[in-house]
Length: 232
Image 1 (cartoon, rainbow, N blue to C red):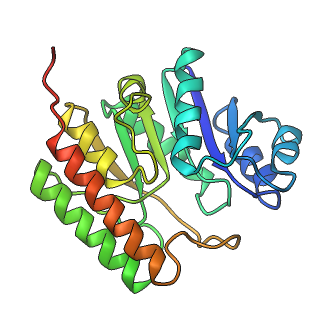
Image 2: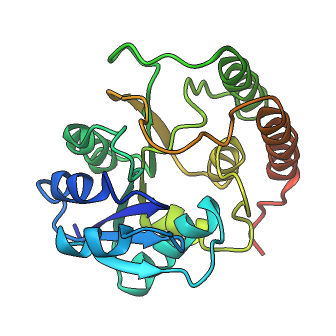
Image 3: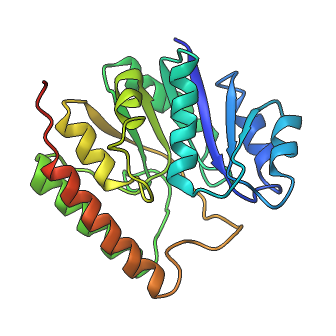
């Protein structure tokens, strides 16, 4: 099946070439969405064999992801694997995600907490993860161990949903999982190995970042739960 790897990236000059080269062992076409990086991210990605779409202004992670989804649909890709450009996602797990799609899943979450590796979170992030896992279970009756993973795979029906105006404008995490489930898509998890990022600063650092994320994600989850999914 026609498959595209989508990598949203911002100031990942040090890592992006290695990530692209690794992904191309399993997926021949790699799209890097450069969110107006201030370094040579785009050039490094191109040198490693990626297609690069570059935002003229920094629009944020969600917009970079959605640009990738729109590119995939416009070029008739049937599946997308999404991963970060900082090297924390192990490309050797790509076949596991694709296998789940082959066996009927519409969306696959690469889970850091499904018995593979020893990835750990800071305390506040761990509390937030558990909180959103609870909201997902209460609203969909489905258990999701890692609702904030950025290592994902989608089939075309989910891509079509995620290019719509219902896609989150800032943090596409638990709210998008709920939205996909409420639209009848089969969402599964598979355990993956993860590394801690050694570049940049997490959006969840300090006190204000986590508090803002929790507030915005709570609003997003509430919106996803209340969205009318009935067919017209």
